[in-house]
Image 1 (tube, rainbow, N blue to C red):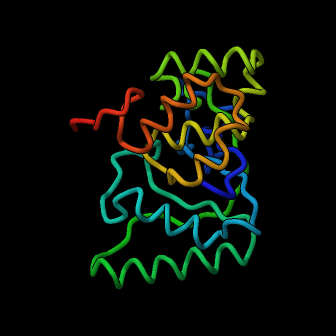
Image 2 (cartoon, rainbow, N blue to C red):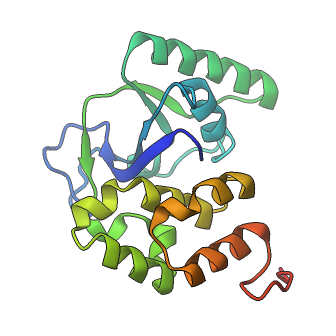
Length: 191
């Protein structure tokens, strides 16, 4: 989506030093988003967040709890206002937590860019462009591609930026087909 520069998954909110998937301690699995506030605001990101999970559901462990980690007082204020709005809208208690950001630990490589990793053709092209996992994870093009494959983003935005991804013509055509709801040969998706 426009304004999102990169995304990374990892662990946040706990006190365990250097957590891992097998030794998470009291951390929560989290998504870190680098964004351009001129293009997309923190409030807009919050709106997307509220639409992407069920804030009235209790998580069964701290590993999977829903939380917003704020970096400053303005973000805290906006997050608390958004909880009030969601409580009013849903007429139920919101169990999502608003917590201060205390650090973020990057998850293992195999957890990064889940949707993209499910498509070996696309993954292979980006692996060729970004042979270093650090560059792969930090790539804006990879973050956007992962988002589009996850169902986020608009076709018009994709058409404007897809040439900057470095993909083959075949892969670009296929991605546009997926996002538009048609396969690469132009047939309508039966689902």
